[in-house]
Image 1 (tube, rainbow, N blue to C red):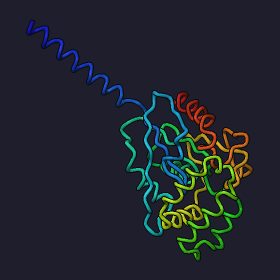
Image 2: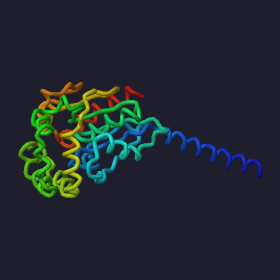
Image 3: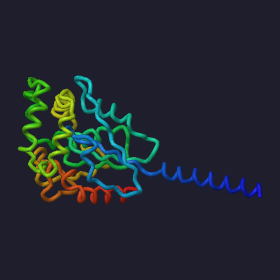
Image 4: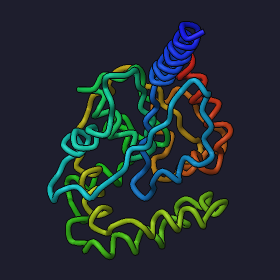
Length: 243
């Protein structure tokens, strides 16, 4: 009887270890939000249960930090000992592409973003030559974002409380320094293993400048939140096929 109990305990323990190992082997999907957002941006995204979800948390970069430097600092949140994927929106997509150069994820999915500065609209490229943004104080950058966001991207009104709350929580210095980071981004290569999902009604980064893989009808710059079901389907399709 004693031997049976010992055997039973060992079997249960081994099974628990096995289950823990299987759980630990789930590929991780890291979500990287846009400049004026945080993890709440992805609240309507539902991934296949075979993936584990983690969110990259922003902090205010040091003054003068560039896109590559910021990407390297944020990448410390990523466990590279396991299979992983990056999903980035807007600024998050740009950072994901920079991370791809040195982390080599299994796949990068960028949404409502640009893969290099060639995909920027003229008003962005122009400001690298004539940097008007440098004379705007940080508090005014945040104020301008709060005023212009509903005008430039009216689709955000479908869930304006979330957008207002996310932007309200942003450090003005974060917004100011990442504006500079975006406008001075000098990347010209596309990068590798990238899938691009874009909306045909994106006024921030117009689709006419983008080499996309999926074009979402009536998709705005905010479509990760406002079209969560459709975006979830596209993300899951790409991730499942990449496993």
